Length: 583
Figure (cartoon, one colour):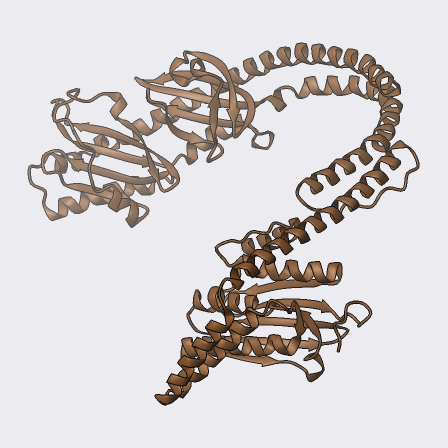
């Protein structure tokens, strides 16, 4: 009831404030937007006039050949002598050197196809060797002003190409095509003052009906308009459309004009934040007083919400951990109210549920063991041992001592693994068993596999669960060495301190971080299933040791591919009173 009253009070205070702020903000921002658009269009008109004057200067520059009568006479000559070619090249170089924004100057003779060029780099000169297709032979034939202007890309830099037919007045014959390749540095000086890049504004200059981008004040901008009706092909004269630039909302103000018959479009993006700056100042002024009124209410609501909601969130996080199989929930907050009692009851329930699942897991493990023993019992062990002994005897008769030794080791392995009576054995039995296993494996791999084993004498009679070494060694050989380079070294280190440390090390393929994370998660969630990387044997060993020793058992895996992979088991040493692990 108190929470409902608090929420109702907050709603009754906040909603009128929000509505008044929204109405005021909307009215102010619309007025400011119209003013900003009109101001920018007037400024862009001035910029457009400057751009047309600059294009007029370039057009005059392309007519510079007409002022040199000697050059014109050489260009009219049906055949060009070497000294004439040198003079033409010199005049082109003079024109190029007099204007810093020129990247290249090219002249293509209509009759011979001869190309004269001066450029700032050999790479650009190579790319411009191919002349513009379709050079007219008569003035005004198959040529219009839209072909005179072209936007080229030199790497990531845009260039304006001006192609001007050189007409042999007073006739209409076209002597050749003069091309000026201009970097937009001068255009940048004319346009850049129109925008404030620090405020997020940007200016675009497009030419031609296809809206070819010639200049942009900020490179690599992603433009997005609000709807198909806002696309540039629908623009006419002066106007604006709403859209986004690099994900930021704003207004695209545009001015369309022509130089001769060349369409020009100047576009400026103004961010909504910049437009609404005045509206934001007004809104902020109003909000200051409103926040003062809401300050104490918010503090009170925050304190109450924190003390009420935070324990519930922590309880929900514990429930999520419980759903994922993690029973290590956080400790209670120690509160004495209803929430504190709920946390204590929940923690008690989790503890009981953990014990119940452990008992269930032990029951399933015992059932699986019983089924395995039943399958093992279907094969008469005496029959197998006697058969192996007979084969070994035959090998000795044929003087195959090595085969006899290997059969004896295989028999020892089978006798050890099929012994259903012993669940807990001295560590020396495990070592003898793994030495037989490694002997067979080294016989299989020959010189490709080597191993060492170290164990202090006082650790030999410590009793441990049966069959904990072979799955680890088998994983190292099959998934580390055999699936790696095919050769490697294995070392089994057993150390005795206050606990028994067993380490299995190899220099094989290693274990990927994803597999290590999967093993850790499966162990914590008690998910008894394996993967293609041999997780069943390892998890089986870890589960058995965890069930036998409880939380005192610790393990760790570290891996550096083809250098060293270490599996470490830390087994607590029980006294005779606790389980009889020491003899």
